[in-house]
Image (cartoon, rainbow, N blue to C red; front, side, top):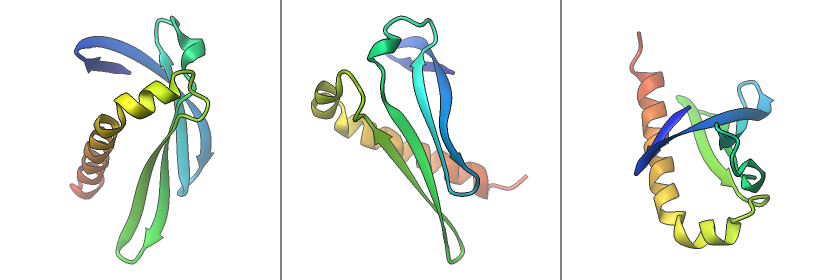
Amino acid sequence: MDMKRVLPYGMTNTVTEFDEGKRIAWAPKPANGRGARFFGRIWRYELEPIEGGTRVRETWDISKEAFRLLLRHLSTSRFQRDMTKSLERLERLVTSGP
């Protein structure tokens, strides 16, 4: 996956949980392999049927992240903003039709 935050970089994602129609989680690591041992974060979409559609909750689990204290204090608002944008893009993709 090609990413950009100031400079371009690549990430490799590994699916760590999958329950069709309910949950998918993935663990990103640097595509070049450098520093991978410090990455322990898990991103997750949880799906819940509701009247008229599906509620999608995105979570970010850093409980096994080497730099979790630093991330918690420096990046929380940025990640919340990015998660909101991610959910908005997902909604547009699934509601725009063919």
